Length: 184
Image 1 (cartoon, helix red, strand yellow):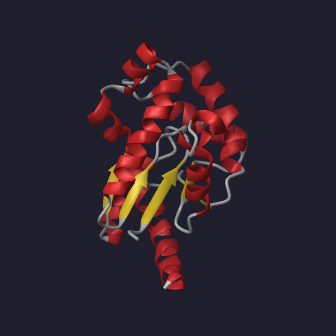
Image 2 (image 1 turned 90 degrees about the horizontal axis):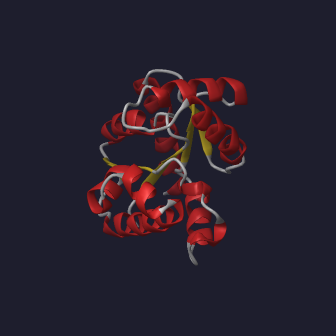
């Protein structure tokens, strides 16, 4: 079975900044699920605006399965911000898929802070700097406030992403190398 490190966290947590650096340090490939979704289905915002969030979530699960089944080399895989937050009944296999990702020994949660208020402030600032996102301060703040407790409840390794991507990647690299030794 190919080693996969899932990077999870809200939008603006640093998955696509830390992920490529981490993959390079490990000598693994990096895949961003959002990029793969867009290569198969087009712009995510336009997809959601046209077909709705539920269909987007279902299709994103399908894209994840395609990506996961095609992996032949160790991979750092950045998941979409809401991937582990979908309703349990979104797909007949989603609950098992979510559980497998969460319990995987290499799955790593990125958050800029482990306390609600600093996390909200940093995430909202980062998200508002992204010109391709249609969000506003209120919607971004509402989203992270809703998801923060759910992210904190995940039973996977946690890493603060408030430092430079290389520093965060270094911390995760040490964790991964230690886990790989234990798994052998």
